[in-house]
Length: 212
Image 1 (cartoon, rainbow, N blue to C red):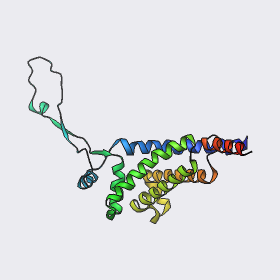
Image 2: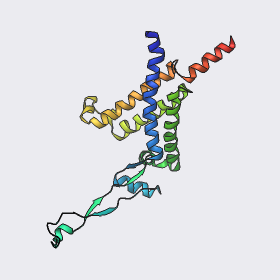
Image 3: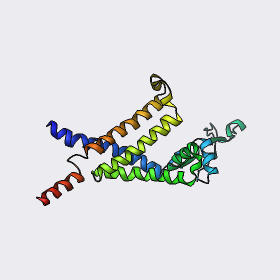
Image 4: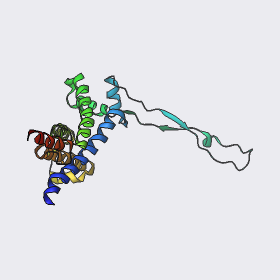
């Protein structure tokens, strides 16, 4: 029972967890629109990257009149503006981050960002079915390791501060250890393999059988 759990169930659970994170993140980066800060929107626009700019839409306050001939006052009918935050494709957030940290990359920053986003989707699919598992897990190790270095290290400066101060910012704390958890699980798949409940295992078993 223990052997089956360690060689089949645990690798399967690790693959499902990593694949779920990569598929959702990759989908958002490749296809969905995300909200961004005005400063980021300005920088992306300067880079000729499409941003849906914020617009002001009139919102009129509606109140029921007690009688049909009641005239509402100017203060009740004056339009109010509702600000809609700027949005852009999820991958452009990675583009902005690459440009912010390494502005000399130029067009390579866009290429690297799209490579990372597409790799998340492809690696997530491969891990979910257990095909080319070690290769997919290695790609995710590189991506999550780079993300930890850039976001936690360069942006937030967490590696230069007292680790006991990390929990004071719960968002950064969770972000760091979520990335570290995915990196560790992926590294386990690189060295331990996909487990018996995978296409890789079935293919290996059939190959061994044919050789015999």
